[in-house]
Image 1 (cartoon, rainbow, N blue to C red):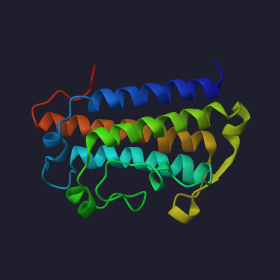
Image 2: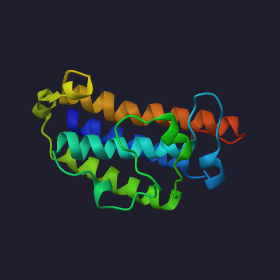
Image 3: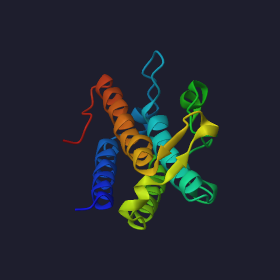
Amino acid sequence: MNAIALIREQMNTAHEWMEGTMADVTPEAAHFRPGGSAHPIGSRYAHAVVAEDMLINGVLRGAAPLHASTPTGLEEPQAAFFTTHEWAHSVQVDLDALREYARQVYAGTDAYLAGLAPENLDDEVDLSEYGYGKWSLGGFLLSFIFAHVHDIMGEISAIKGVQGLKGYPF
């Protein structure tokens, strides 16, 4: 297995697990405010999907993110890569529409990865304008896309647990 095949396999698994984690989330559970500085599940899920869309399509492809032309299920779009407390606690999420948008984002990510060759993983991604400096494409994909999905999935699982729900799907 080459590195691209491995990254694709792991991204697909991360997406499956994220969707499994979200499968039983109701609108009430999605908008539950856990207290403190934690954000509601709906806004965390939205952030994970929108950020992946913006990073894959906007940063790596240099194109418009899907959310510019596709319904997202978000009453108010996330304006930047970073989620503000105000947005996270005020945004209303249509879970069915957001899940459909997520499927499209995931398919786009897989298509992008399928078009790479292993040597592309050494290409440079300049994130200086966001305060993150320069990364190899491989490091960027693993840290900003793959690990981000897992990080957010963990947050969602914890917030589900606070509500007495099962977190991860396994």
